[in-house]
Length: 100
Image (tube, rainbow, N blue to C red; front, side, top):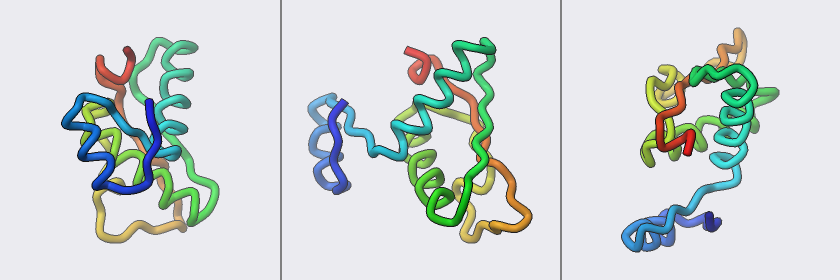
């Protein structure tokens, strides 16, 4: 896994079948995978701590969904606006690719 902050760079490497993952996406995928190892459940719920954490989690979840690592994402991942109060966790399920 390589890191890149620019979508252009990510798209170029994706064509070469090298997956670039943002730190936020890697953090979310790692937490979901560790939960899967403990519980054997593909469903994962992430409760953000603040507005910055929310934005990172949403961006990470969008990337993971686009790359096929997760599915059945909560509506807040693609919503135009997200409310911090009351805070609803970001939820999704790992795919087979996400578990590998």
